Length: 379
Image 1 (cartoon, rainbow, N blue to C red):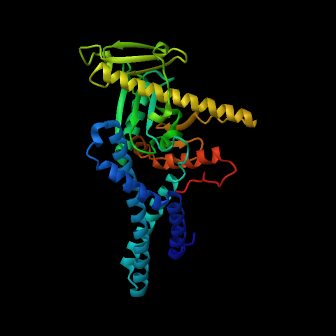
Image 2: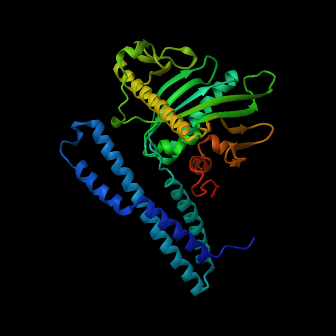
């Protein structure tokens, strides 16, 4: 394969970055940063803690995004100077340095371009993620715990704050279910392609004959609710139960009935929270999760109604989405995008960006079939 001309590649990257800058509206970002900066400096800002956190989080995110784009623009200009210098001086070490920097820029600009595809109604919000053990017994519970670690490690690698609301431990090992929040802008748009069934194939450490076991876990991703969503839940439509928080093996982890379980009677949706210190805090957290589930249910019903009016069929992409095979070979493969890798340990340690970016492109194409083809894997 012939080597790509650096000048041509820099022209392509410049065009891509210009397109990203146009979509992100850098001037608009600067104006919003200035406005939020004034609000953040108000002496009474923290009188309303929820509003203050929303303002400071949005301000921090916008500043980070702007710095990222401006930094890429400077680096692209600098790498052109490096190539020019290397050619003028016939300097191979400088040329090698320029080629490495160009490769790094290519990946980072591609990553940023994917971010501009997150334009759905709720994409800019934080995410609530639930993982549930499905078929496979104790292996499925162990796999559920593996997936929880994978997502928390992914968030940690990116510096995204997380909060675990509820963990239901399995009796022998692993967890039956868990719900956690990823508290960063665009977490929902980034992670919503993870929604669906994940399948693990490996030698079971819980089988005394060392046989291969297939197990399944379901991942559910919904957007965090905001004050503007108007999710009204009358008190007579919920049942609230309190119980003692439990840890692995069913052991009690505190001496009071502080854990809360809320059942939404009209829909049968059940949520619980046991990780906060008090019953009041657990109830508030559980209500936030319930509101998010009801918001997603409403969104799905509206989408189905609009599709019916248009005479369209709604696509159910939340089925089996990814295989994790640890025996007889090592492979993780996404069944929708075709992205795969043999480095299974890295994936289970949170290196899932290639899968997530391909999902974003795939979802964009699935939801906008008449638009530009963004489904290709641009790794």
